[in-house]
Image (cartoon, rainbow, N blue to C red; front, side):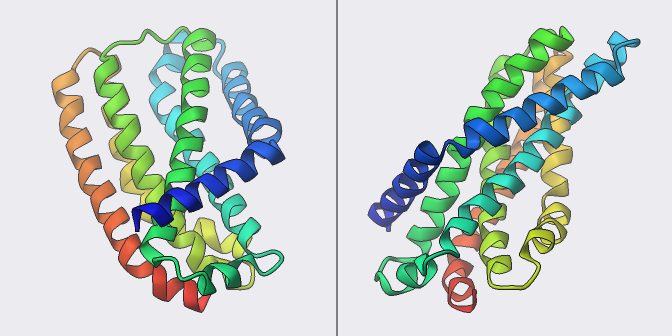
Length: 222
């Protein structure tokens, strides 16, 4: 299963590297959001710093949807999805590989986004350890849930609009917990931030475990 996961993750990451979609489309989208919010809240610098955690995770959330749609859009062309079904790979391995590829792409974008908001908004960085733990757990939850709902929506008409309808309500608790953890860590209350991180660990475990178990039947139906 882990070997299959490495193969699928490597394939997805190579496709992204060669297509440059993340670099030429997703990254400019992230930068545009940061700049637009900066212009909108420029008269009130303190408010801009206060909304940084929520803005950060809202941007990551929309980026996650773009990454998941891209991941399964590639599979839906040229019979690639049929090839995956007939490959003999473990369904959980395919799921973990695709989720890992989305996870790594999101982490790379989060680094860029974090540097951007720190430099442009003047947000002071405190509780770096809690910020890193929160980012890892929340990104794992988003990638796990997104991959599960991505394969569910892949075989349905209107999947471009159906995925947000399935994905956003399911990950709303992740968005709340991650924003709260970031807000407390940046305020210097790392202990309280870690309590929200523990909740994120639960979400990540549930989403990834359920996705690994359900991916096989969902792939057959897609």
